Length: 282
Length: 305
Image (cartoon, rainbow over all chains, first blue to last red; front, side, top):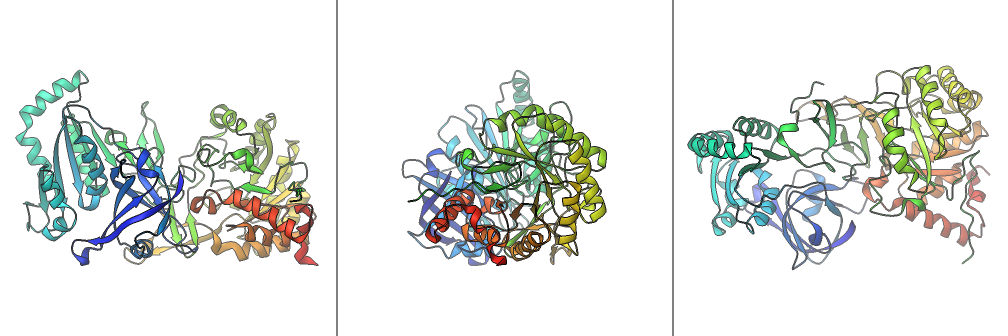
């Protein structure tokens, strides 16, 4: 869908040096958006910058007709976006892509790297409505980052979470992989039980992850080793956003073992972690 | 409002209006069906097909540049056989003129593809891509030398009765010479321009942005170059021209038609505003009406007076 959405709110959140923004839009998108999908945003009115910017959907409020996006200013495109004011309109293509599976029972392990938390917010929001138990492991740079990127909100909804920081200023010092390793070790007995169930296709424990590619590769391999099915949300440079240009592909192993391309914008951005081939021979 | 005749004059290729969508920017026609009825388009050019399936180049395949886009997709496609089996039947249902873009790595490749595609009544024309900058052999190598360009077109001509479009590369010294070569090879129509070879370097990593190092530049950044080449080709040969290269609105389309394009093709602009082709159709109609033309054909080449 191509539509004009009205800006409800567009403001800097957290520490100014992190350049994180929250953008709330009102319009049609909220009615059909699903967790893990994204919108393609026209940031300016001229040919430069030329392309739309893909931003994942972090919150969906069908009743109010609002979606929430978070973005970090990374270049001219996102910088232009910060100038957008309340009540102005924004050209949006969306909701686009294939999002996360919403589990209906069991436990969901969420793995977030840095601002990879944002698409997981919409998943948390949806899963909260079910009986599924959520556990979040979130890796970031330092305390300042977490305080800027929505930790307060997670505390408010009393989510079960653990964080790691590179400098040890909050939670465990180190990478998210350390948190995950620890979690898997602590729960090995339960996991064994869960795996036995999964043999019968019960899937009582699933994982969903979003973050940098290196992190996704590492956590996918750790989860699969414990037979925990994992979905990963990938990021790639995009042009059309609808699957027409083949600019944003990833490489996967098909069911018959053959190597093939899939489009991050259309077939993803959420993929089964087990099918992704992380290191492609150039 | 007087009804303007929108049909373009393109040898053997009948279109309801002069606005086409370009190869590689429109997939196989499925992706934009939820945005508008594709039967409103003059025609639809499918993603370039090769004899065998291709995985294409590694990512990053895209780099945004000032008012432009570099791509190095590298002709990812399902291959001729799969195209005929899975994609062509769906294209037929779109009820618009289907132009199939083909690429090969040898003369035999082109001969084989042209023969297999020619038996299909739902294909309106073949666009011979002798200008892809993103593959190591074939493609642009055929399209930057007038002799081999003529040879490829002549081979294709021998194997088909379908209207044959030669898609020219702008990465040449003399575009007129290339146009004359494909004309004597037997092309019915000339389309231009394909992308301009370019590159982008990330000053942080100090490496090329594209995994393939170089890629093809498209978008408004190339428009003046494309327009100049359409103008030159119009003077060099009698064949009808499909003009493309950065066309983003009806004013751009008018400019290309005044330079000599009988029809125009919209590429990169689809990514920014999927409705661009339809807005161009109505803009052209209005332009003709306001200026008192009864047919879009009347404005073709007017800038040469």
